[in-house]
Image (cartoon, rainbow, N blue to C red; front, top):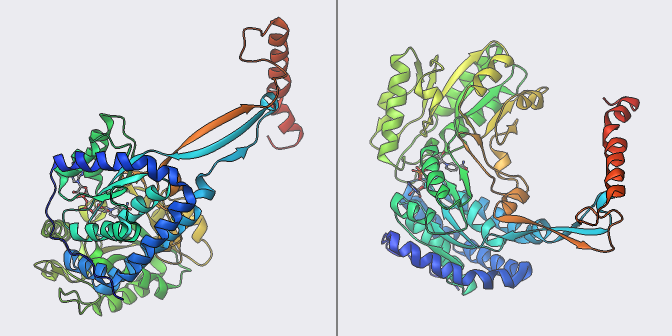
Length: 489
Ligand code: NAD
């Protein structure tokens, strides 16, 4: 039997609708929490099965709305399902109540910690990966026991509606996960609606507005923002593999990837060989809007203008186009562009371009590569290619994620967290950190026997005070001396 997916017309909601959705989610929240991990896991697994059955239809909607080829849309959905499966399976293990050790002074207590759901989580998503990215918040918030109000990007509302319609169909639950559609005004209303946490994925500029709106009610926020990722290649790297990673990293999804390779720093000893490989692979690519090619159209006309301005600025400041240039732009279809000798302070190197372009700079050594990579105000992902020194190079660069000798694979491992630092945001989706992101830690102690030394009582007399003074000196005052004795200082 084939399930027919509803394909609703995107009627944009208003800020007033946000209030209604949040009130419904609030009402359903206690029931979802009381179901417990096992029952929720069953419902989340049913949702996963429904998404899988309807993956083709969802991928079609996704391709129509944002322009990526069907096969890329399917890949995105598969990745999201992997993370959903992991979250449902591991929520209890990561978040459930567990006993933790006490200290000598508190040995009369049983100490436990558990991670409780916030209540209602608002999720605001982007259009570039309209299934994979919001599911990092939606699935993990639900698995942690929260109800969710999800606002997809105004560019991909039907994809967002299809995800939540699938949840409704699979679980028979209509208030626990809801979708509201609309633009920035609806997103801003969600931030101010009294939800207990916001999970945001989008640009750094919007992230700052979200944080300001959340500050009004002290609503915590997870911010997954923009990037300007580098690929760093040392002289001992597998140069052909590094070039393959660079081209896919820069051009797939028409370059509209937060973790896209936008800058390459390549050791001068292998720069020529690397560039030849890159050009050969990039020349073989073609972008089109008819689903017949490996790269689709760009989604937003506004973003095409940013790509145009970055190329134009780079070329006017001495940069060379090794492949393509301003002529690569035809409406929303942009053919691959490879630039070199672009000044490090130009927009094509410092700002998120979000198009099928890359800059290549030859460097004298890895010190220079590390310095230039770290100069960015963004720090989301990183790729390092080197047979011997990959780890050592990666350790000197600030980034939320790194793949060594492979591109972006850290985002595919369900146990690994994903997120940025600096202007790329804070908080994490995926893995155990991604589950804890949507829960607060609650500490609990139970008194098993009366305390040998009553610390929190006015009955604490001078004798106890003197004992505490001795403990301070004996236990903590000699810590340095003991380490010295053991040769660890
Ligand atoms: P965007 O910031 O324009 O919009 C993101 C979402 O925020 C949309 O749903 C939008 O309607 C909403 N929004 C806009 N103004 C708002 C406001 N004032 N208050 C509340 N919500 C508001 O981003 P985009 O163009 O949709 O997505 C592309 C950006 O997302 C890129 O910068 C990309 O790097 C980033 N991104 C980051 C990650 C990550 O994991 N770090 C993943 C995917 C995309």
